[in-house]
Length: 175
Image (cartoon, rainbow, N blue to C red; front, side, top):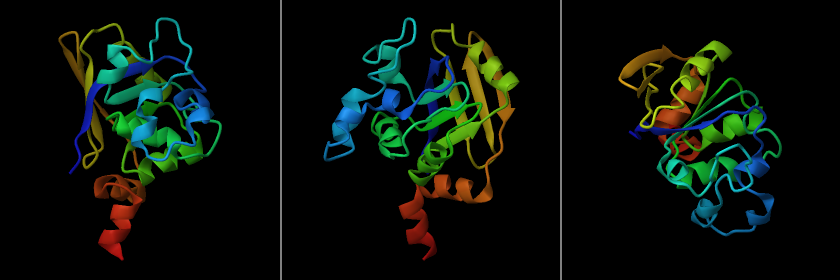
């Protein structure tokens, strides 16, 4: 089973759209791997460097509300996948982006604002990491000598997709 978690990239803004996740000019690339260098290229946040070490090391993204809004293309989850990001945690997601994450076997975890705020309290910590246990529906955040476990909800079907490795693997197992 895929491991979910690792170093965290905090993106402190709501309404991060799919054009900021992967610019439309790269949608003609032939493979998912061809998208890899362009992750978050057009995202503008104070102090954020899409080519920086924090972005390269990230395995989990934590953000605010309405993450993945904009276009319905699956390239946005794909660019996370080929960069080793296994989970995005946010207050809410655009519906199609969220389902595309599950379809690709990645976790899209929605948490209430107060829990997202609690995660952002770790943002200034150099080595913050989050591990997710999709089976038990818990995540553990570690940083600054602290550790906290948070429960999350995921529908049984979406959980099955993630645990199977995505829609294609799920279908292969079931049909």
